[in-house]
Image 1 (cartoon, rainbow, N blue to C red):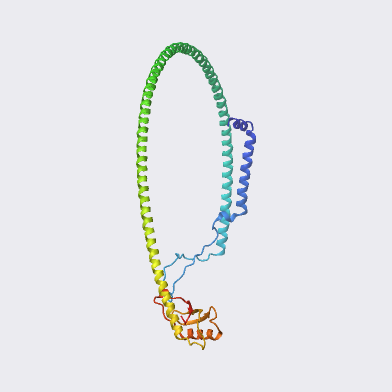
Image 2 (cartoon, rainbow, N blue to C red; image 1 turned 180 degrees about the horizontal axis):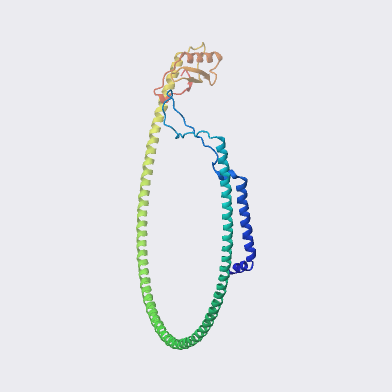
Length: 368
């Protein structure tokens, strides 16, 4: 800021000249605009304002007026209008002169103000220089005082630090002595604790050994009891298995004996049934033989006939086929035997259904 003021003070003539030139340019612009547009400052002087109003008729509905009607001024004579224009021009010229006078006065006042500002500036610069010199002197005095105070403070600080260092050294030595004593006490305490710990560990080891021996003894006794119980259980189980095996063997022998008995009885019954069936089958075949022989017509001069015959039949005794397993002596006899068998259809029924056979073989011997 001071540098800027110094620069302005050195070039005050150029500054004043620039201000005057700017003022003149502004005045020329203002007056030039007023001169070329005289009507802009006249307003409505020299012009007549006519306001129209709407007059309502009887045929139209009555409505409130939207604008207040003003009386229309009567037209003035032309000579009076020229007089008014001339008066307006004189008034504009007077106003322009007044404005020029005001501008000149303003420029004069601006020049006076600039001179006053320059004087104030010079006074301010001198005051600033005096103030700066005073401040510099005060700062130098303060710096000197601060330097002396700093030196005194440094000396006091050095003395204080020396005293503190001596006190700290003394305290350190006392602390080292105290720490040595404490270390000795701590060593003694640790030795006592180690001794007590060893004794305690020995007692604990003895107690654990005794406890372990008791536990081992109890374990062995428990194992012995468990082994005895297991052996007793095994013996009991073996006895039970032996008894169970003996009972099973006895039961198997009894079942085998019963099975053999049932088998023998079944065989005996089957033998009796087979004998009965054979007897009934023989009687059945004999009945068939008797019926065939009864239906046989002996050819002349034939005797001692004997031949085997195979007959196929249905469950009702109906004959489906007849086959001679050997000739009965001659074709005529063979034909006579076949005719006798077909003539015996249906054959006699068996005594029971289980004796029915679809194929029957028998020996045809009518002479025996």
